[in-house]
Amino acid sequence: MPEFRIEKDSLGELKVPANAYYGIFTERARKNFKLTGETTHPVLIRSYAIIKQAAAEANLKLGRLQPKIARAIIQAAKEVQTGKFNNQFLIDMIQAGAGTPHHMNTNEVIANRAIEILGGKKGDYSLVNPNDHVNLGQSSNDVTPTAVRIACRIMLVDFIKELKLLEDAFALKAKQFANIVKVGRTHLQDAVPIRLGQEFGAFAETVRRGRVLIELAADGLLELGLGGTAIGTGINSDKRYPDLAAKNIARITGFKFYASKNLVYMCQSVSAFGILAARMKLHALEMIKIANDLMYMSGGPKTGLKEIDLIDVEPGSSIMPGKINPSIVEPYKMVCLQVSGLSDVVLSTVSEGNFQLNVWTPLIAYDFISGLTLFTNGTKMFRTFCVAGIKANKKRIAELLDNSLVTATALTPYIGYLATALLVKESLATDKPLKVLALEKGLLEKSELDKILHPAVLTEPVPVDKNLQRKIRKRLKAGK
Image (cartoon, rainbow, N blue to C red; front, side, top):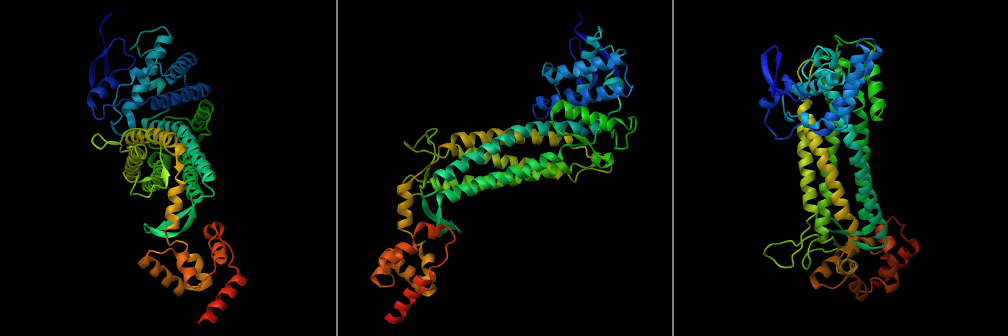
């Protein structure tokens, strides 16, 4: 068997490995683009193949493809979806605008496999042609954005699942820590008391809200511009094709994809990707805030807050014996920072289209696939090796609360703002607890302090006890 076959295009002839399913376009492109070292991601290969199956089915129904050719293309496209031919996709993820190399790589692999199915030899494009048959009524300009939408929607399934699991993990901790009262903080200073469960409940709510926004953005990916061909006007297509192809994609994937009512808009706009990127970035930034909080709260072991204990996953230093670092929170923050940066790049592409086309879909695909992979894996790591194992250091929390002045705010309705402020000032100067000073000065009785400083009063809205308030103020007025 010859080592190569000769293929021809408008630029001339080129040798292609005889056993390759790809053709001359791919051979040129794989030599041109050597940028990331990463070839077409399997989820993107699958997404292109889904489109080719859906397109062939639609064109068969419309009578635009001969049945035997259509059936061969459909079978070949299904085989590509299984990953069987992933080693035939050799082009760098960063490549020519609009993803034409990705797209033509798909057309060539499916065409050559379809040729084999029909009993021919690879490269005999008289049987099945990559452009005339596999790409019938299609363009890179409507296929590639559709492939990226499908790929992102597929990947979002696992990411959204991990977000829900992380939300549940925080919610469980909120329940476990429900009755632990601790020092709240604003401006990195002591504030008023809060329950540790409330703090973790807010973390759970942060994840829930981020998940909901991302789910809404995922729905925006379901609108497809397939059938718009080159610039959205549908040249060389059939007016019935967009709905047929979209319905086929919905059936194949199980997602509710549908044809857009304005294909010209879909060809030039990538705003749906921008919305998803913005919401991923927002969630990444929110999670960095939570990661920072956990690092501060677990800091120590002797001179930090040390309110919570994280799982010890590895020694923390090559030189300091016994040191333990937040070794899961740190790479999770790295993940979030990277996702934030990748999202910024995707957002930038929204403005970079010109006239009827936005050509930056290969970059969008690369950044989303990278970002979703990182975020999904990172979220799982963070949940499994950090959040799920967090323990409250009750002794340390009580110590910090008892030595703090954060309960002072609860005294103001009874003894007034100024009297409380002076009490706080004296406590700081003498290092005496507020309770001790209040008792020494006769401002409050022990039973009154116990009632006013009850945890329920400190950490949720409770009406001021008017009778107690009148009693205390009357006594203080009489003492003057």
